[in-house]
Length: 510
View 1 (cartoon, rainbow, N blue to C red):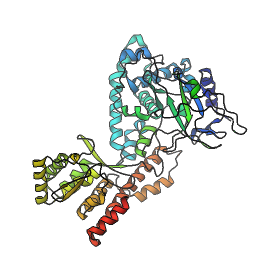
View 2 (view 1 turned 45 degrees about the vertical axis):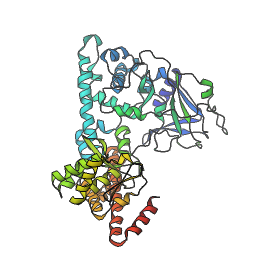
View 3 (view 1 turned 180 degrees about the vertical axis):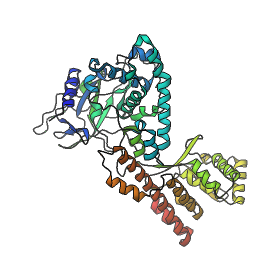
View 4 (view 1 turned 90 degrees about the vertical axis):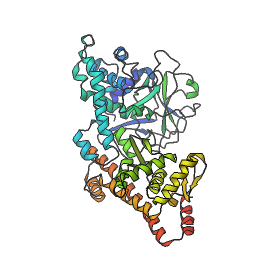
């Protein structure tokens, strides 16, 4: 039996022209919230839901449109204001039937207290990011929302536009918004946001045909929402075959009489959810927000997944330089990094915030291996390489495959050369040291301590603790794999000839 809030939502959606298949069941449980299940077999190409754009909550459809446009509130900043405005109207809002279903806020880290952020996310990929996000979001509110409360003609109730309400609205946008089209921008899409996420296991695809309405649509995707502006990319691009068949009857289950995409082609007023693979009766129907690691999932949506193969760990350039300074002089470090850059290599990010990725399998980014290799070159080899680069201007970008300078091989990004060729013992030792330094950021508790704490933790009652532990454990497992990645090469260097070593590593990476 549907919960009261679901019944209210269904009545509201029907009144606004939403359509959904009778083959879909909306389930609401205290433990897991709302999920969408298949009452019968669904086939690839079935159109299972249609949502009118005008019934989506956007800066163009909200009653606050005039205020938003006059104040120049772009992107997610404007959408957050629209959500707060509609909430301030209560039962008078055209979206009241939808808003009553939404939580006050989603449990994403931007709405955690600073103490919770510092305690639960310490050492993780999210710690510094969330600290910066909270500061940026506060500045957005202070500079753009707060001044509007002093404008008497607007008669805005400060109770609904305070900093807490702004953070709450931002959390909803982070976890639920979709990119609709060039005119509406991003917005809240009722019904579409009921489908839960599962990484790499998309069943249903959100599609938004571009609108031909160019009126007032001269925004260039700019936004003063600095903390979360990258999240416009949440939206799924429309890659589904638009000649999808209509939903057919399956067994005793009668499907809704929804028009197929081919019948409604050219109708830019509707959004659609289309099955991209078959789903059997009784199973949950999943959307996907992209192929994201746990840091991104927790940051944007407030949850993590066990053994997420898209997890990574970053090692900051600052940490590499800290390791180098423990053995060499600052002058040595600066000179070696400069040579590495002149060879055409770079880290992720920018020079203000550079980092190297360690993959889920524990494999380090090749640019890190090359930097460590250059850091550890004997002085005479370094001087020859430096001179050669100065004379020839040799950059790894200039050749396909590898660059050979004074007997030292530097693989290009396009090269399939084994990274193990860049793992002499001193480089392996450096990787082990970096893994230990990165691990130390998590504090005194061991990974075993974290795993025991996770076993005792209740997902329902201690959601923040549970997902932060999951994030930290998965990151620490990657560091363990990094150590294993380096360890065999150490043993190889001790016991194997170079020819055997090359043969073994080539086989492993093929």
